[in-house]
Length: 142
Image 1 (cartoon, rainbow, N blue to C red):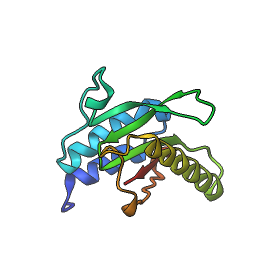
Image 2 (cartoon, rainbow, N blue to C red):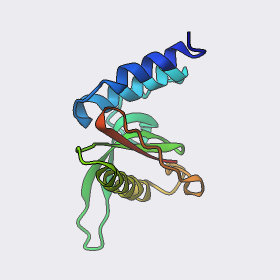
Image 3 (cartoon, one colour):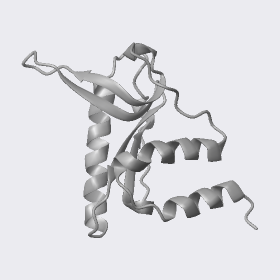
Image 4 (cartoon, rainbow, N blue to C red):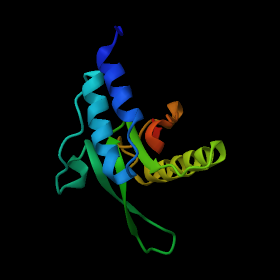
């Protein structure tokens, strides 16, 4: 028997998953938190600044032409990390690498758009986590 049965169960369950990004990333993240014995993301509230640990954290991009645009961070924990999930297309390592680079660029753009006063993940420790299981990619910037 595995020294970490909860982790083995989690890996087995998610290795078989093949649904879309939207169908799986919130459940995957919540179950990962449970497996690691970490508090899961909390329900979001209307006041964006109060959403310290949530899914679909709203964000506004302010462009040089003074026309803002809206976006949503897939999963956000204030001053710790943000996660951008992508569904992988079949096609091998190059497709995986392209998806990882796309997710990373999107996550970094979101991080730059967050208020600078304590809401951004610390860039000095920027790392990426990629998961090939179930053809879903999660880029985490922290």
